[in-house]
Length: 548
Image (cartoon, rainbow, N blue to C red; front, side, top):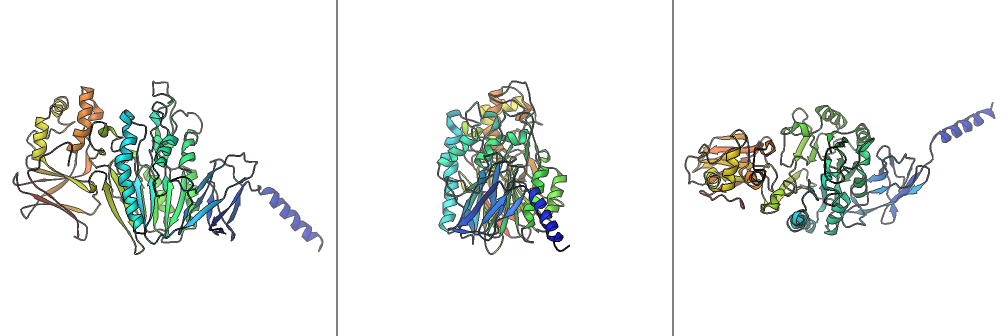
């Protein structure tokens, strides 16, 4: 028996080793020549940790064609490209062959750090006079770089996240601007902060249909921005970036843009594989960590419930994040600024961010500034994070700097509406239920405050000659956006089109002044009664479609 037991043990070990697939991906994670232990490495399904010498190995099916790391706090992945951190590598060999992928980390002081967000850039959507790239390079990028440089000069670590729809699938082939070309254009500007991205619905190849479309259509995403699920730690905070667009692209024989073979349809959802990976990812995150969650489509959006993930999936996320008291979500997709209530899911806070392109550069073509469809000026959203706790948020517009609202003297808007021939044409083909005619006298002495930075719990006060006016929060269209976008589109169409009907957004505040000439003060207070913003409107102030 003494001789049999070791034989049985050795046989069992041999069987166990035979059943365990041999590693086909390995590498080392180092910083300044030394191995970094305990770093998460993943293939999108499994997660392994580096050993004391920074080494890792795994057997992977190479299904997602990527291996990537979760960069730990106090480091940033080395960049060989101007803007892209090397936190992932493409797997290019068959499953039967070994691949070696090393990663290098650079130490970074993250005592205070900032995250700047761009979203819905839509490169390639409009190439008339090269307006998209020209306006980005000479209007958006200087603002983005200044915001970044100012903070870097203060010693802050700065990161940039782009939240999807970087290119525009419908025009990849017709306008010769796919995801890779758009990526290379941004890279050529030599931005000084690392840029991370998630996929939007327009970041997929519209020529791809058939089986496994969601994965196969994202082939350029994997080459530019990397995996559809990944995370990083910054100064003890845990950041997660997930692609929550499931691209369907139902085959269609209808006439389409060049190279497009389907309807480009999609669902806002997370796949089971992503949720399974997410559970594994947060297993190693300490209790109480602040989670930051970045997606293209909103998790919460009370204005457009059809353009967000389902309540059932929110409940799954709530269960996955049960150990974490605060989850802050950032999304694009809606082309508006919206900070909605999260209802019963109190651990979450959602920021829906306006499009960097405004309305996909269409207002720019007509000589107006970039403006999203809720009237929000195009700009850059910034979160400054401090070791003392919490984050301070700013929205810095490309044309006017830090700005949270636009205030209208509706008497002056009425004059413009009455005098402008194109507006009168629009009013002639649209009934009142489709478009407000602000010249019809019913808005006399009213003050409109489009306060796009409104957060639940805040109160907007409008004060005239020391007297506080009654203020109502209404879903109302924005006059500037109507003039910059809908009026030219209506003139172009020459007839009623339902797609050009008024947009009503939830952050318009309306008050009726007692006179036509007294200045008014707009004051915003938080739940504690503290004044957080204040702005004065001198009246009368002539309204112009070109300026505030």
